[in-house]
Amino acid sequence: MLQLYHWEPNANSGKPMLALAEKGVDYESHYLDLLKFDQHQPDYLRINPDGTIPAMVHGDLVLTESTPMMEYVDEAFEGPPLRPASPAERWRMRWWMRFFDAYFGPSLSMIGWSVFVGPSVRSRDPAELDAAIERIPLPERRIAWRKAISGAFSAEEMAESQRRVAVGSVLLEQALGQREWLASDSYSLADINGFNLAYALPLSQPHMSNDELTPNIMRWLRAIYARPATRSCWALGRTDMARRVTILEGEPA
Ligand SMILES: N[C@@H](CCC(=O)N[C@@H](CS)C(=O)NCC(=O)O)C(=O)O
Image (cartoon, rainbow, N blue to C red):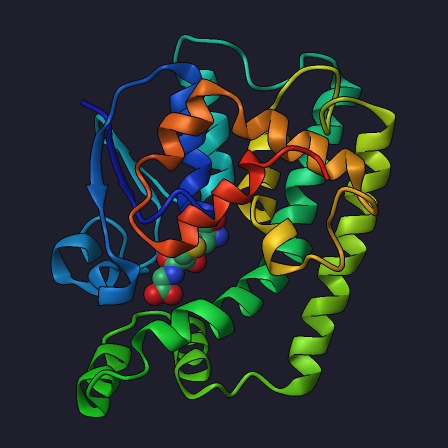
């Protein structure tokens, strides 16, 4: 059976979770608690030596990198197609996924790590935390953990992340004013990718994303949250972070 190693329905872990739910593919779920550093334990490092999540095992194949993993899911399994067929629309889908992964996502992630991940672990025993950080295989992840725990993201870094998230919100609002979904008139992996990053935007960045300023983003987020696959996927969430999705349950203001 297909195996998925993941954390919450959120950001990178949520991408294959939601794609698999949309396709109706069953998988064996291995929940790794990122806040307990499960992703750096030897058993998981045998699967993904980078110690990052998600990872998916299909037969002999070990897949990492959540965005190409979603494309694999769409290609390898039966179920509704999640990629538009025309070259232009497929380009647009990939344009958005590149934008999310390279620009919008890392900025939102820095904000998330400073307000949620760091504060969630910082009260633990410092020696234990230090040892946990020393076990992280990737140097860049060690730096991110240290900064999140000590609150050391600089004011400049945070301001730049806020600026990039604001740029992303404007682009999203414009695009969703032109068509129902990001890539075409059908739901695609670009929407799945975007939702995983932006579902809590109206809560975390209410000045950038609200019914008055960004009605198209709000329409899009609510439409994705109304899908049965999204409901079932977010029901797997265990933390307050994933529960932020309930902001989408309200009626438009
Ligand atoms: N580019 C990778 C990034 C994977 C990644 O960095 N995932 C984060 C969680 S969203 C992670 O595993 N962090 C664990 C850590 O830093 O210890 C992907 O898209 O799958």
